[in-house]
Length: 399
Image (cartoon, rainbow, N blue to C red; front, side, top):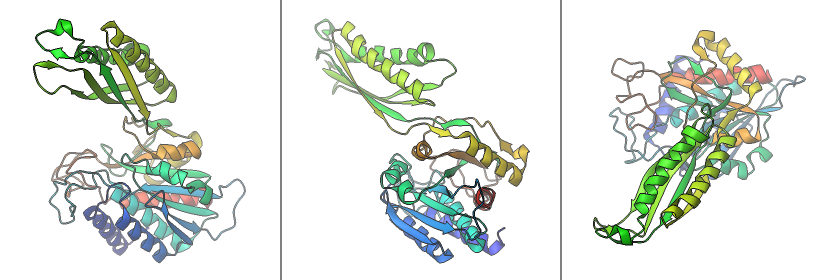
């Protein structure tokens, strides 16, 4: 599908994006690069400024629509980088201190640009393909922002798809999961009010730290004894804020953390029980507790028809032996979930490799095989395969 010179072009684009990373809602250079490329290859529409720095390129097919085929399909790639100081030493390492592409979004963008170029060359499909380049996936809910800015009203789609490069899966392999493939992400802050005083006279105080310790233990009972054991629920208290010095019992204590689940039913159960515990347990010690529970990214839940469609495309492309239909889901979160709440679609993993040493497939990356790591690097071998998948998907659904 791609000749050598084309691949070199896309390698350069990907490595340029890697060298010039931009944080959430600051993807101005990235958005401009994408806009220019989509115009260059002949997209019929290119609209910028959606949900901040997001943009959409529309490509119209040249063949007559067939019965029971979708009118339009959306393909989405995220664009933003992370606030991490890169430790790689290759020539295209980040030029911005404290900012790097440690999650492979530079590769996601390049894959979608490569697919757009190939589809634009022939237009051998019916209907429209909407290439959706989304900002602020990393904690900024850019997918939600694009939807609130009229993404699907102005660029309607019947189906939508997205991929993520995934370390731990071999290059040339795919991972799919029906139902939830990524968890919800939620944050909480608990304020505990006690009664401060001298550390030598605790009997005259109401120690919020003691209350906090009981709360932390009680939360673990929710996942181990209250939630159905086959329904994952992770409650993590990750930060405790209390006190100024060693000999004073503080008036207050704060607990901060996250809750992750694969279903709304489990999430509702966890939040309700946490509220019950925060309200009742501190009273035993004479204190008070207040829970601020903030729901953020919902679980990423695939739709069965699009899941099967994507699997069929992958199996035709790389063979059944290289397609995992029941990949292990991740407790990480993804704001593509917002789009899947509005439109049927599928989110899946594209293997980025299983080892990262000097003899590995990806010789550029010196660090361990892990997303959000200071030595992570997207494997350029995925560009051709990812683009072929998108082109094959469009040909299958709109051809």
